Image 1 (cartoon, rainbow, N blue to C red):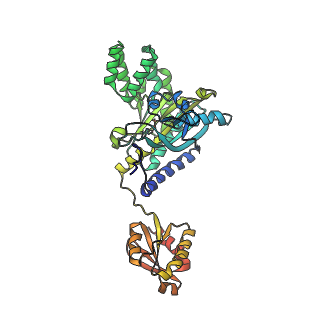
Image 2 (cartoon, rainbow, N blue to C red):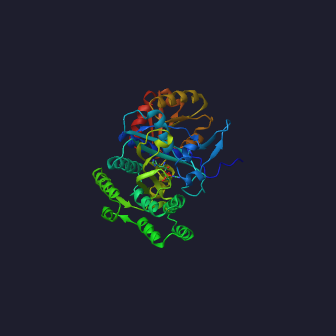
Image 3 (spheres, rainbow, N blue to C red):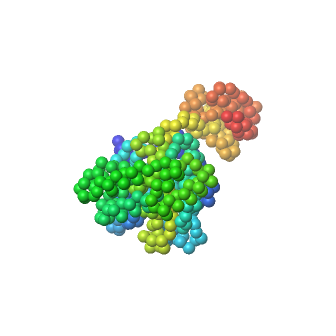
Length: 421
Ligand code: HAM
């Protein structure tokens, strides 16, 4: 048997139905906020990502040579592709641009629950504007998307990468070492950071300042302890606007240093505490990338939601909704009724209801068993006696109750019954 690749998954109809519902709810919110959908290729020239996405992502990329000997990569994320698209085809459009996307991403990681080699993101990028209200709009969109998924227990943290970056870059002369320090702060790997400080003869005092800053979390009152006046004022305004947008449960966290290298200012993350180790369901922030791809430097703010993790968090939090893939399953009582059953099925489908019909030439009792196991809400029994009265029998698969209805109105009757639940 051929196994599917490690870290990838197959999704069956019940799971896909739940995933699509969540995705649709989030798409609807994106449209409400004035964002339009874009789709970019699943693979890109690997340079698109190596230019700025950050070492950890590059180490995890699926890279391959195509038949023309060009180095390609499966996309590890979608932000770089959207900005490439913007630079090459949309840079003359009036700003800001509000774009969103849904797609699969690939990272060669150590698979575990919530961490996959192929996973799905819904993300948004607001391009061409840089101010607290832009960042607030994007954070607000992110929070509304998560709310729309139905998730109750989640935690929003907002920080400013400039504060930690300026401290580290000011005090650590070697940019390679500085980059490593920032990555260790991102991973909260302070033991390894201590070893690296010793190996590079960096001061304990700096180590303490970095760990204290990484631990600085709380309400807006901690803003007064931010010694970067510009970041302080920026965050103050941002939190004010968020409050006016009804997004209040937000923690200020100066320890957020995101793994991707392109962030310049505000950074934010959303966690679902029930998920344990892989609890981050969303990450984002403000950045510039366009100048790297040959365009003008344009500020943007965006985020991406890990849909797989949102689904896991929803599973941990709520009962899974019942899956009823069919409104009706049409059952002929005998061979002579089979063709007529197709006409009835067609009538039901043309009303927009989901209907299926026996294709296996089963007996009526086996068909009723099948209808139950296929998750049909109603069975439509097409028999000789009913036919003589130009009628069919509707059987409620939950209660077993049966009603005779005129064949011409079968779809209307089903609709009425379905609306009752
Ligand atoms: P990211 O934090 O690398 O950011 O990924 C965003 C989200 O994707 C994570 O919070 C997580 O939920 C999910 N995710 C990441 N890796 C995996 C994985 N291996 N398995 C399952 N889920 C995963 C970005 O990708 C940026 N492009 C976000 C952004 C957009 N920043 C600005 N604009």
